Image (cartoon, rainbow, N blue to C red; front, side):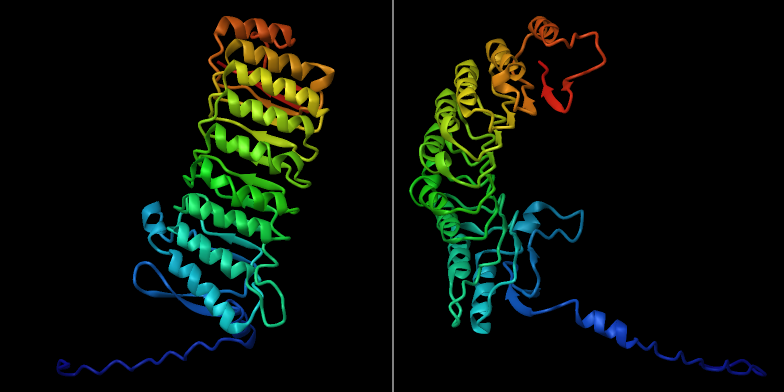
Length: 349
């Protein structure tokens, strides 16, 4: 630029480039252990690290983005590519926890997941032998996808926690392959099948099959599955002989008073093995609430340390009477959570 008369040019300043220490370079290099390039459903490619114990594809980088944007990012082709790259590397997956929630995995993705995890290396090892947690709620698969998950469960000796809630598969999804896989499995401790639209028929298949004798399953969630009294009766029959289940969540169904009475009878025959039960939002009304509170306070129900009876169309006048019988009058200090030592009973209208 033109300088005014008598002006002197300002000296140029050069900043010495910052040098990274060997420790910093080492830590940066350690960030990605075993990178692979995979396609996304958006038409580009991303680098994923398959050398980690936890792979999470439930990615929302910006809080202003929607779950739809998250679901559109990865799909069945991503799952296929991950395991094809592992096959090329002839490697056992290090994944102990796999989160595919809110992605458009679909039925095809479930089948690729199954084939990838049960594949063998040249040394005869199972690719998915380290997997303990499979987290796939809202992964947009249906009946065929749930059957693939059932086959995966049956082939696994390591899975402990499986969450496949909010994948609409209907009763057919848990019949056949899924029941057979769960019967074969000996490792799962927690199974979440909430909001899968299983209906009474789906629960009957599970309760009359694998749930009766599974040796490790301690937690079962079947919330919001359009269950009525028939499902409660199936579960009551299962509870009478089950040895492992400790927590049963039936929230958000419609078992009614008839279903509540059946469950109470099943819990009595369970001989104190079940410890936590939720039947909130089940329209069990006064008759059902009374049956459960009587059980809770009896010697046969003393093993229950958590019982949720909220939102069951209990009239206020009947709640006053029941709380008086429990020794927890309405004018007392407690609200809807009633404490009996370390035991919890939840009840409102």
